[in-house]
Amino acid sequence: MSAELAEFDFAAQLFVNGYPLVLNQQHLEQRLLDKRITMKERLQVEADLRDREEPRFVTVAAHEDDEPLIFMFIAVGDRRYELYAKLPGKYDGWRLRMDPGIRYMKVDNGATAALFSLVGIAGERLGFEDLKAGHASVVLVSEERLSGVYVTRTNFRDKDILPSSKLLEFKHILVDINPNFTGHDAFNGEVATFILRLVELPDWDDR
Figure 1: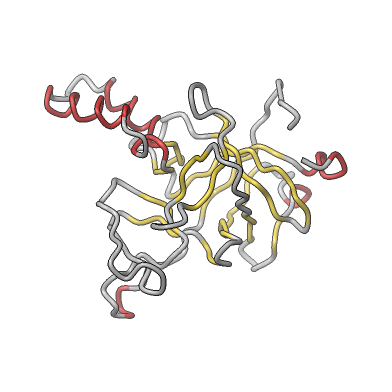
Figure 2: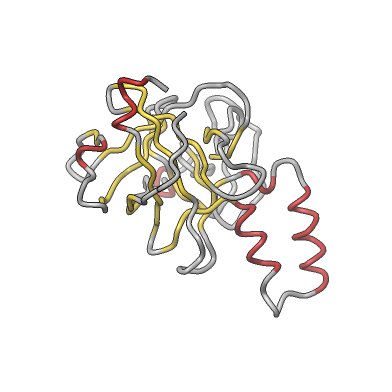
């Protein structure tokens, strides 16, 4: 992180339709607390938590009051940001990026750069100085593809890069390609609009 840009760093939570974004690890852990979960479901959730990929993608919480994932926006200039996850446990401090193959958002501990930006309702690119009210309606943009992020419940494929690639259906996934895999324009998705809420981090770890 550039010392000159540190004053533009911030931490925020993101919500869609009133539900917070979380890491699937958080969603799975909440599932285990459900007293109505069956033994079959419990065993599957426990297996998913041990899986290499299943806990690492960003999803939408099952309940409005679930603890949101904290996104650390680290400024790299020109109102563009690297994103890092802030949460207890294994994935704390991991970078958020779009999977290079199937294009869903996940945490990664590698060094591959991934940049994002925020666009306001008037189409303007937003910086920290534009967010001081504490809340804003935003589109999250993946700079790699210059695409807004979609929230989808379905599998999808990128016809340009991986014509035969499909992601198994998840509860929700965030992708930077149109989730319509039918080839028919009538089924095109809409880029998601998120509510961004700034949060205080008293023990901010200066990276």
